[in-house]
Length: 121
Image (tube, rainbow, N blue to C red; front, side, top):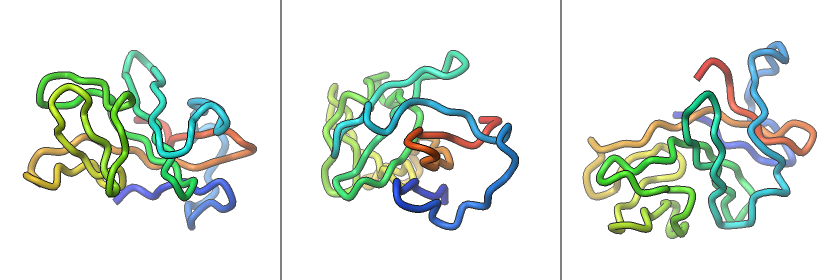
C-alpha cells in the first residue's frame, strides 16, 4: 500500500535522493477534506488532504465514466466521483463496492511545505 503523507512527519518513508521525488503543489493549495487537481507529465492527479491533514495522491480519472476525482467530496475515507457517485478509498484506491475496480495511488510525502510523489510514476 502506498504511504500517506503527513505534514509533521515522513511516515517512515525513507529519505532517497532528492531526484527520486517530484513536487506537485504546495500543501497550502489544498483545502482540508478536499481534493486538488494537478497535472504531471500529461497525467491528471487528485491530491487529497484528509480532515486529519494527511495527503494522498491518486489518478484523477474515475474509471467508470471519466469524472474528476479531485472535484469529488471526501466521505468515510473515500473520494466520491461527482458524476455518478462511485467511491474510491483514498488510501488504496479501491472501490469499496467492488475492490477489483481501483484507481492508481502514489507514494506521497510533505517536504518543506510541498506535496511530493516518488518519481518515476
